[in-house]
Image (cartoon, rainbow, N blue to C red):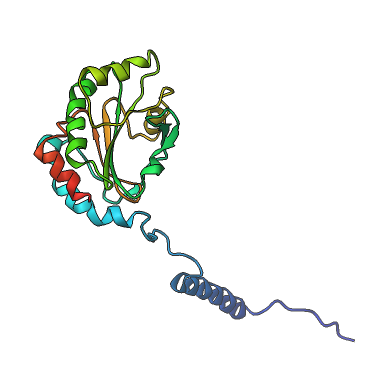
Length: 214
Protein backbone atom coordinates (compact mmCIF):
# COMPACT_ATOMS: atom_id res chain seq x y z
CA UNK A 1 0.00 0.00 0.00
CA UNK A 2 1.13 3.51 -0.72
CA UNK A 3 1.18 5.79 2.32
CA UNK A 4 -0.85 8.92 2.05
CA UNK A 5 0.98 12.05 3.24
CA UNK A 6 -0.62 15.29 4.28
CA UNK A 7 0.77 18.06 2.19
CA UNK A 8 0.90 21.70 3.37
CA UNK A 9 -1.61 24.06 1.85
CA UNK A 10 -0.42 25.58 -1.37
CA UNK A 11 1.44 28.88 -0.94
CA UNK A 12 -1.19 30.71 -2.97
CA UNK A 13 -3.92 29.66 -0.50
CA UNK A 14 -1.99 30.91 2.52
CA UNK A 15 -1.23 34.17 0.75
CA UNK A 16 -4.93 34.59 0.05
CA UNK A 17 -5.79 34.01 3.72
CA UNK A 18 -3.23 36.55 4.91
CA UNK A 19 -4.39 39.10 2.35
CA UNK A 20 -8.00 38.55 3.40
CA UNK A 21 -7.07 39.20 7.04
CA UNK A 22 -5.41 42.47 6.11
CA UNK A 23 -8.51 43.50 4.21
CA UNK A 24 -10.65 42.84 7.29
CA UNK A 25 -8.35 45.01 9.41
CA UNK A 26 -8.52 47.79 6.84
CA UNK A 27 -12.31 47.51 6.74
CA UNK A 28 -12.37 47.72 10.52
CA UNK A 29 -10.52 51.04 10.42
CA UNK A 30 -12.84 52.44 7.74
CA UNK A 31 -16.08 51.36 9.38
CA UNK A 32 -15.14 52.09 12.97
CA UNK A 33 -14.36 48.60 14.27
CA UNK A 34 -10.92 49.98 15.00
CA UNK A 35 -10.87 53.71 15.74
CA UNK A 36 -8.63 55.71 13.43
CA UNK A 37 -5.54 57.01 15.21
CA UNK A 38 -5.59 60.71 16.08
CA UNK A 39 -9.32 61.20 15.63
CA UNK A 40 -10.67 63.78 18.09
CA UNK A 41 -13.84 63.10 20.02
CA UNK A 42 -16.55 65.65 20.76
CA UNK A 43 -15.52 68.65 22.86
CA UNK A 44 -16.03 68.46 26.61
CA UNK A 45 -16.40 72.25 26.69
CA UNK A 46 -18.85 73.36 23.98
CA UNK A 47 -19.91 76.54 25.80
CA UNK A 48 -16.31 77.68 26.35
CA UNK A 49 -15.26 76.70 22.83
CA UNK A 50 -18.03 78.91 21.49
CA UNK A 51 -16.55 82.06 23.09
CA UNK A 52 -12.85 81.16 22.91
CA UNK A 53 -12.16 83.06 19.72
CA UNK A 54 -13.84 86.25 20.92
CA UNK A 55 -11.92 86.18 24.21
CA UNK A 56 -8.57 85.53 22.50
CA UNK A 57 -9.06 88.53 20.20
CA UNK A 58 -9.44 90.80 23.25
CA UNK A 59 -6.27 89.69 25.07
CA UNK A 60 -4.56 93.03 24.65
CA UNK A 61 -3.71 96.22 26.51
CA UNK A 62 -4.02 95.69 30.25
CA UNK A 63 -4.66 91.96 29.72
CA UNK A 64 -2.16 91.35 26.92
CA UNK A 65 -0.41 88.75 29.11
CA UNK A 66 -3.52 86.54 29.12
CA UNK A 67 -3.29 83.45 26.93
CA UNK A 68 -6.01 81.16 25.61
CA UNK A 69 -5.61 77.53 24.52
CA UNK A 70 -6.43 76.40 20.99
CA UNK A 71 -9.10 74.15 22.46
CA UNK A 72 -10.57 74.47 25.94
CA UNK A 73 -10.31 71.74 28.56
CA UNK A 74 -12.08 71.24 31.91
CA UNK A 75 -10.45 73.21 34.67
CA UNK A 76 -8.58 71.17 37.28
CA UNK A 77 -10.81 70.38 40.27
CA UNK A 78 -10.17 72.92 43.05
CA UNK A 79 -11.39 72.63 46.63
CA UNK A 80 -11.19 75.49 49.13
CA UNK A 81 -13.11 77.22 51.92
CA UNK A 82 -16.05 79.55 51.41
CA UNK A 83 -16.76 82.84 53.21
CA UNK A 84 -18.39 80.87 56.03
CA UNK A 85 -15.29 78.72 56.48
CA UNK A 86 -17.05 75.63 55.11
CA UNK A 87 -15.66 73.52 52.25
CA UNK A 88 -16.67 74.49 48.73
CA UNK A 89 -15.19 74.01 45.29
CA UNK A 90 -14.89 75.54 41.86
CA UNK A 91 -17.51 73.05 40.69
CA UNK A 92 -20.04 74.94 42.84
CA UNK A 93 -19.80 77.84 40.37
CA UNK A 94 -20.69 75.81 37.29
CA UNK A 95 -23.25 77.68 35.24
CA UNK A 96 -21.49 81.00 35.85
CA UNK A 97 -18.43 82.58 34.30
CA UNK A 98 -15.74 83.00 36.97
CA UNK A 99 -12.43 84.81 37.24
CA UNK A 100 -10.38 82.66 39.63
CA UNK A 101 -7.46 84.48 41.25
CA UNK A 102 -4.83 82.95 43.56
CA UNK A 103 -3.19 85.40 45.95
CA UNK A 104 -1.33 85.75 49.25
CA UNK A 105 -0.59 88.67 51.59
CA UNK A 106 3.18 88.19 51.18
CA UNK A 107 2.81 88.68 47.40
CA UNK A 108 3.26 92.39 46.69
CA UNK A 109 1.75 92.31 43.13
CA UNK A 110 -1.25 90.44 44.57
CA UNK A 111 -1.86 93.22 47.07
CA UNK A 112 -1.56 95.84 44.35
CA UNK A 113 -4.09 94.26 42.01
CA UNK A 114 -6.65 93.33 44.69
CA UNK A 115 -8.50 96.70 44.58
CA UNK A 116 -8.99 96.25 40.82
CA UNK A 117 -10.48 92.80 41.36
CA UNK A 118 -12.85 94.31 43.92
CA UNK A 119 -13.94 96.97 41.43
CA UNK A 120 -14.40 94.33 38.73
CA UNK A 121 -16.71 92.36 40.99
CA UNK A 122 -18.65 95.56 41.69
CA UNK A 123 -18.94 96.24 37.97
CA UNK A 124 -19.82 92.78 36.63
CA UNK A 125 -20.72 90.65 39.64
CA UNK A 126 -24.08 88.94 39.17
CA UNK A 127 -25.77 85.56 38.98
CA UNK A 128 -23.83 85.10 35.73
CA UNK A 129 -20.35 86.13 36.90
CA UNK A 130 -18.18 86.17 40.02
CA UNK A 131 -14.60 87.01 40.88
CA UNK A 132 -13.32 84.16 43.05
CA UNK A 133 -10.16 85.29 44.83
CA UNK A 134 -8.61 82.38 46.78
CA UNK A 135 -6.14 83.32 49.50
CA UNK A 136 -3.37 80.73 49.93
CA UNK A 137 -1.63 82.06 53.06
CA UNK A 138 -0.58 79.12 55.25
CA UNK A 139 0.48 81.10 58.33
CA UNK A 140 -1.00 84.00 60.31
CA UNK A 141 -4.27 83.43 58.53
CA UNK A 142 -5.91 86.47 60.10
CA UNK A 143 -3.68 88.76 58.02
CA UNK A 144 -5.65 88.11 54.84
CA UNK A 145 -8.95 89.29 56.29
CA UNK A 146 -7.21 92.25 57.93
CA UNK A 147 -5.61 93.24 54.62
CA UNK A 148 -8.92 93.17 52.77
CA UNK A 149 -10.48 95.25 55.52
CA UNK A 150 -7.62 97.77 55.40
CA UNK A 151 -8.06 98.36 51.66
CA UNK A 152 -11.84 98.61 52.07
CA UNK A 153 -12.79 95.63 49.91
CA UNK A 154 -16.57 95.79 49.55
CA UNK A 155 -17.54 93.40 46.78
CA UNK A 156 -15.33 90.31 47.02
CA UNK A 157 -16.30 87.26 49.04
CA UNK A 158 -13.44 85.77 51.08
CA UNK A 159 -12.32 82.38 49.78
CA UNK A 160 -9.28 80.67 51.25
CA UNK A 161 -7.14 77.56 51.21
CA UNK A 162 -4.89 77.52 54.30
CA UNK A 163 -3.22 74.33 53.05
CA UNK A 164 -2.48 75.91 49.64
CA UNK A 165 -3.63 72.70 47.94
CA UNK A 166 -5.12 74.66 45.02
CA UNK A 167 -1.70 76.20 44.35
CA UNK A 168 0.13 72.88 44.49
CA UNK A 169 -2.44 71.10 42.30
CA UNK A 170 -2.15 73.78 39.63
CA UNK A 171 1.64 73.93 39.90
CA UNK A 172 1.89 70.15 39.51
CA UNK A 173 -0.20 70.47 36.35
CA UNK A 174 2.17 73.14 35.05
CA UNK A 175 -0.43 75.90 35.19
CA UNK A 176 1.06 77.99 38.00
CA UNK A 177 4.60 79.21 38.56
CA UNK A 178 4.05 82.00 41.06
CA UNK A 179 1.50 84.47 42.38
CA UNK A 180 -0.73 86.09 41.40
CA UNK A 181 -2.18 83.73 38.82
CA UNK A 182 -5.63 84.16 37.33
CA UNK A 183 -7.92 81.96 35.23
CA UNK A 184 -11.02 82.85 33.26
CA UNK A 185 -13.38 79.87 33.55
CA UNK A 186 -16.48 79.35 31.42
CA UNK A 187 -19.99 78.34 32.43
CA UNK A 188 -19.16 74.71 31.73
CA UNK A 189 -16.19 74.74 34.14
CA UNK A 190 -13.56 74.90 31.40
CA UNK A 191 -10.51 77.16 31.24
CA UNK A 192 -10.87 79.89 28.62
CA UNK A 193 -7.75 81.91 29.47
CA UNK A 194 -4.99 82.12 32.02
CA UNK A 195 -2.64 84.85 33.17
CA UNK A 196 0.57 84.76 35.20
CA UNK A 197 1.21 88.02 37.02
CA UNK A 198 -0.90 91.03 37.96
CA UNK A 199 -3.28 93.06 35.82
CA UNK A 200 -5.63 96.01 36.12
CA UNK A 201 -8.81 93.96 36.23
CA UNK A 202 -11.00 97.06 36.45
CA UNK A 203 -9.66 98.39 33.12
CA UNK A 204 -11.76 98.64 29.99
CA UNK A 205 -9.53 96.01 28.35
CA UNK A 206 -10.15 93.45 31.11
CA UNK A 207 -13.87 94.10 31.26
CA UNK A 208 -14.21 93.74 27.48
CA UNK A 209 -12.32 90.43 27.52
CA UNK A 210 -14.43 89.05 30.37
CA UNK A 211 -17.71 90.18 28.82
CA UNK A 212 -16.75 88.24 25.70
CA UNK A 213 -16.84 85.07 27.82
CA UNK A 214 -20.52 85.64 28.58
